[in-house]
Image (cartoon, rainbow, N blue to C red; front, side, top):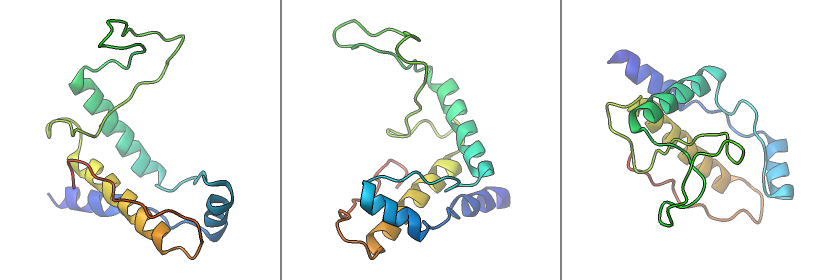
Length: 131
């Protein structure tokens, strides 16, 4: 149990944005933030996504289920997706890792709202089943 608490604290240590990153966000309306989470944190989140994906049996497809055209087509989409909303079963992957990600994203939202840059919209909290 202590290791779970420690892992949760580690994921919350997403680094603050640097002044140049905030300026690029203001100027371009987007910014790429390398190493916002550490490689270890990213690796744990990727492992969680793989575990959730294996548990769900969900295939990322193109087309529409409603129109009967959904299909796996690697010429169109080679990636997969792993949804955290609605949340997966607690037994799938690590709830602690997903909770830490939600906390880190909410911390980033608060950081952006507090930034002294004009024209950043007010951001609603990231609402998931983990909140």
